[in-house]
Image (cartoon, rainbow, N blue to C red):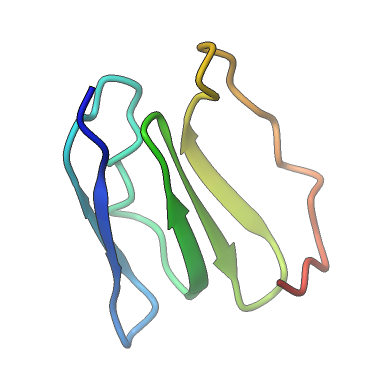
Length: 74
């Protein structure tokens, strides 16, 4: 499995390339991202309003529901 390469642009958007078997590279609609992490099977972004977005799964194939995550600082 190939890991992703991710970059955070100055305008708060991201680009991710690499293995997309779990949808972890599908970040085209992510905006206002201030921090990001890319792993083998998932990509996570923190928005400036403290909400979290995620695509992909954990390394066992489980997805996460982060819809109630708010006011996250770092």
